[in-house]
Image (cartoon, rainbow, N blue to C red; front, top):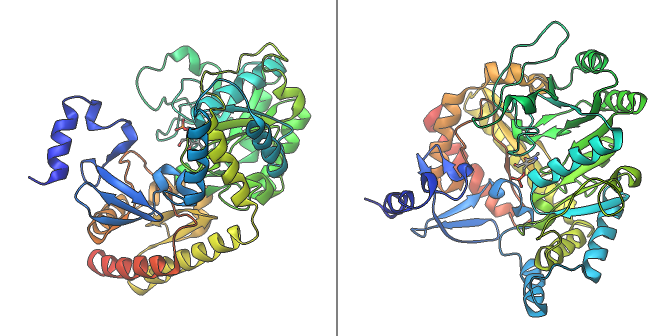
Length: 439
Ligand SMILES: Cc1ncc(COP(=O)(O)O)c(C=O)c1O
């Protein structure tokens, strides 16, 4: 029995499913992959095997693992006391930087996780509008709370108006929460318009991932986003961009700068802390100030704005504003995406890569890139079997793509600033071998 198997057996005696999060389970292995250490673009598992990382631990590792600048920031925080429930000069500076970088940000509230950020954004929107309904989009994911955890993986029936029946993404979600959640298809403006019409006067917010990396890489069409923006403004609905994954992923202003469409509120997490637990809700002053102590809505937490996370996040904010940061990410992305596309062609593998910034989906079985704009079409065409064989080959060859084992569409993968041209060459060489075996 290998070390991994032994650790799994031991871990299951004390930890649910042998892992500290459901998402640690890797369906390719049939267990979590236990690690020893990580550095730059590399993960080293408990047996010392090295992998080039294309998971980025679900997103935070945009700056590479054990980034020396983040380490320095964290050590400085350790020296100063590492935790206290008070703000500092650095907290103010971090908020100032976020307001500078993110177009919609006039005020910021720090929280710890993406789930807290989306929960807080909805509370602020409801407090501001005095309304309750939230409209979300099929396939998108906003965290594991009752307010929004519907129809990420499950496909509900669609009625003649275009409203899609709620399918909770797990057990334990009381039906009453779903009463104020409506789902529609992304990129179908008329469907959204009809559902808004049906819920006229009752809708607090429309929330979306402007690029839903949680569906691989499922981007909004620009014209669609512009229309959604106008509709929300006309109807007095708070438009929320959940940029928990998008944040910093492509040019610092994230998806809202990429599209030139400014939401009322945005949620940020993952890359903004470079691996330290920090998240934020940010947006228009009058909506943000519905939060305490300026307003009646509670948005607070013991660990909000913890010094170590703040100092690391401040260093991340500096790094994304340095002149060559995104040029480098884009050149890595271009080499990787075009390289995998060429290898698919070379081996006659149906599919393509879609990547925006430093995150991408591998669309095995989906030949027409136009299909990527529709979750149901991708779900029908996605070749899960081929994807599974690719992921098995990748693990063997020392390139790490995570397999949650739950998604009916491509997973989200990513890289970071620590990936070198040599790492990409190595990766493409290994993918060439894998494609040869699985085609
Ligand atoms: C778009 C989006 N929103 C919210 C969340 C929840 O973030 P967290 O896992 O930090 O609670 C995630 C997590 O993957 C996410 O991808």
